Each structure stands twice: as structure tokens, then as C-alpha cells.
Image (cartoon, rainbow over all chains, first blue to last red; front, side, top):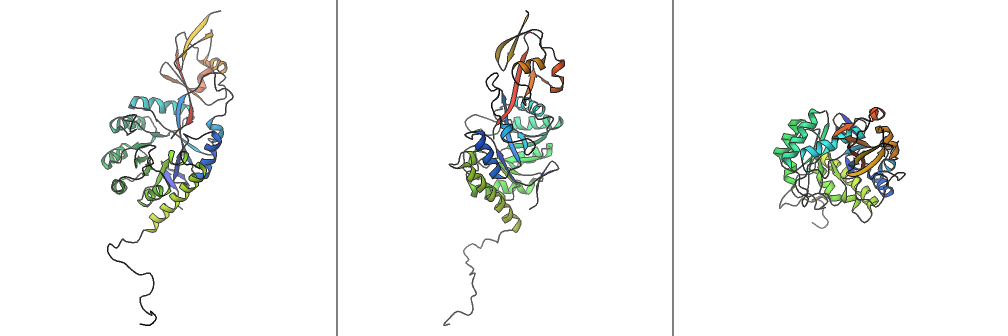
Length: 260
Length: 69
């Protein structure tokens, strides 16, 4: 299978996973391994001063030498907060430029604030960041973000953590036609078929967290997602048969029937 | 002994003066840990920790990577 290329770098897996909401770092590690993901998202937060000396950290569970860390701006509601967070992330990860920008609109829906997102993207790109951007499924905004120089456009399929699946496949189709950088569904996937549908629509990848971490068996679901993304990608490349509405077409020969 | 009042991640903390950023990182048992530090809104490159003398009233943010989506 051809790799996913983001900002000139190749990744074998088209499944990107978050690292939040797991019961412990061991479960995080096992689920991420089962997913086959190369890129893992992380959040940037204040350390618990004096409380976590000697405690294991996420970096022990997921060695940065093996995974590409994608720091996010989850919890940021303004361009300014997001930019500040990612500058800290760049220092934290030794100059690492690939980041996930998300600027949220409100705490209830976690819907992206595209006005602040556009502002932040512009500043970050000028500052040398490679910006993978979480956005709404609005094709016009997606094009604007692409024109600004974002290295991946990552529309929601439905609300973050909702597991509602792909609510507007038609918008993803429009975006697929207009977006040349990787188009990655970020948020809303609930189960394997959702991931497969995203890939069948022509998306280049899927990013998810809760669909795996929130499953009864996260490690098994991680494996299911890996297979679904792979199956969906192959189906897209294979090119599905045309739908024949109101017309059946037998798979077996119509001639040579017994007794006719 | 002179002491230094700092605000670290929003909490007031006091340390004996003088203190460098490297000294603070040691005192907080963060040496060798992957953290990034902002001092009064400016990011402090890790390579400069030994040269940074902390001043009374400095506001520091110390962050790390945690699980997230």
C-alpha cells in the first residue's frame, strides 16, 4: 500500500490515534500498538509540580523514537492560546514542527471556531510550523486553510467524542474534490464501519481517540480500526461498482438453466 | 538567607536565592524529564537553563506532554 505523505514525510499507517481517556499507560501502549498508528496526538498541560516525580510518563509508554508525536491545542478557545501552546510544544519536542491546530468554539459542542483557527494557522505557518488543522466540514473554509499552507485538512465527521459517525458524507466528497493536501477525518468516528466509509469516500486518513479508548475492549477496537482503514482505502483504490438503482443483475449465468 | 518568590503553574513557591533555571529544574525533581518552561510569557530554551538567573516575582509555566486526542 502506498504511504500517507504529510509535509513530505511518509507514514505507513493511515490511522492516526489520540492518547487520551485510557485507563492507564499500559492500555494506551497496547491500544496504540494494535492500531498500527505511526502518528499519535498528545496534549500539552501543566505538570503537577512536586507530585509526579518518579511517576511513569506517556513518553515511557510511547517512545518518541518510534512514534511521531502530534501535539494538539485541545482546550484552546482563541488563536493566541493555541499559538502559545504550540510554541511550548515545539520547545518540549526539540523543535518538532508538525502540529495539530484546533481552536474550539464552545465547551458544549467542541465545534471548531474557524475564525480563530484561520488566524492561528496564518501565524503558525509564518512561524515555521507544519499545521494539520481540525476544522468544520465546510469545503470553503477547508480551501482557505489549504491556501494558507496547512499541510493537512482535518474535518470533523461529527462532534468530538460523540461517536455519531459520518453525518455529512457529501461535504467530505466535495472536500475530496477540492483538497490536494491530505484530507483526514478527525472526530466523530464511532466504530469500524465509520472509518471504512471515511476511507471509501477518498479521505487520506482517519484520526480518532474516543472510538478506541471508549470501546469496551480498546485494544481489540484498535485492531478493528486498523483493518477498517485499510479495507476502506483498498475499496477506494479499487473503485466500487456503479450502483444500479431499481435494477438487479444476476451473478450467475442466465443461460443453461435446467429444464428450460 | 535571601529568598525568591516565584509563581509556578499558578502556585506561589519560595526558594533560596540565588537560583538559576537549571537549579529550579533540579529542585522540582524535573531534571531529565521532558518539560518546557515559559518565564513571564517567554519560552526559555532548554539549552539556556544554566544561564538564566530567576528573579523575585517571576511567573513560570512548566508543561509536559500528556494523553490527549
